[in-house]
Figure 1 (cartoon, helix red, strand yellow):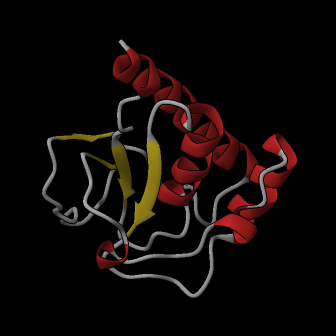
Figure 2 (cartoon, rainbow, N blue to C red):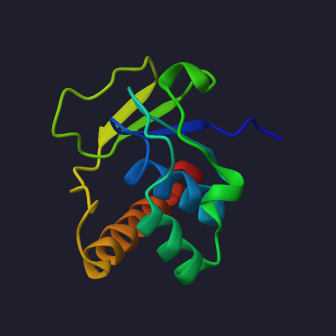
Figure 3 (cartoon, rainbow, N blue to C red):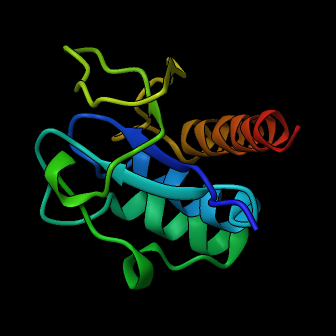
Length: 133
């Protein structure tokens, strides 16, 4: 059995988009890659709108399985996915890097959150397909 690649979803605060990506990565692609999320700074808790909507949409309780992490808190990574930082994106050494260019839905409507979550889900499934082949 081959070792699954480790994928890190990175943004500045590790409280919203990267946390959603970690949760959906585990949910939809755990058989193909390991998912981690981290940031250059952390918030005291995961975005509560993200937590509520992930529970509602997927029955995933991010507060039970995840917490805000810094880049130093995660293992060596094979693939780095930046979420679309409006600031200087964190840099981690890796074999492959891409940016998903997602707007941060923090402080916006549930519809904006659901759009972001849906986009992340599609990108996770697409990444899974690429890594499987």
